[in-house]
Amino acid sequence: MPSLAKLDEFRGLHLLEKHRIESFKDWPFSAKSACSIGKMAEAGFYWTGTKRENDTATCFVCGKTLDGWESEDDPWKEHLKHAPQCEFVKLGCAEKDMTVDQFLKIFHAVVNSSIEKSVKQFKAQFAKENESKLNEFTRSH
Image (cartoon, rainbow, N blue to C red; front, top):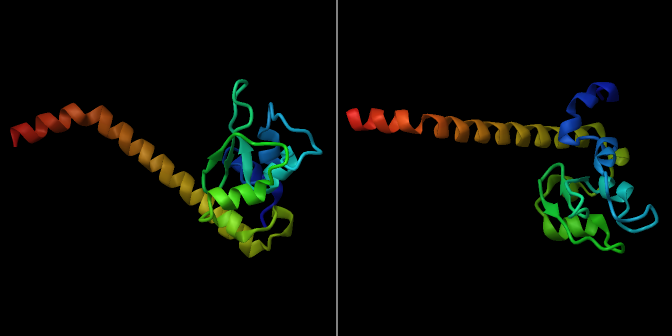
């Protein structure tokens, strides 16, 4: 398995549980609650909240965003209920219990998703920036 220091380069993807834990800035629930920061991160969530909407979290694999958490909510059960197609929640085990093969499968899914998102953004931006040129070209041909 790659060294964890090398995986720090992927911090923005929230690939590691420790990176997901670090993302929680203003989580409203205590460490004793069912949806504590540690349990949220273990179930694949990182914080995407704001000062006003501080109970919002997103899965690092499937991208499902959930809010309206209550202290007794089980992050794994909520994740499965709202995103049963998620590769991470289907795996059903915490990072510490994954095999290397399972970790690499999740890593692959996350990186592919990130690349697809970047390509879509690039295409949309390119199309927006070149729309007038395309219209001009199609009118002249």
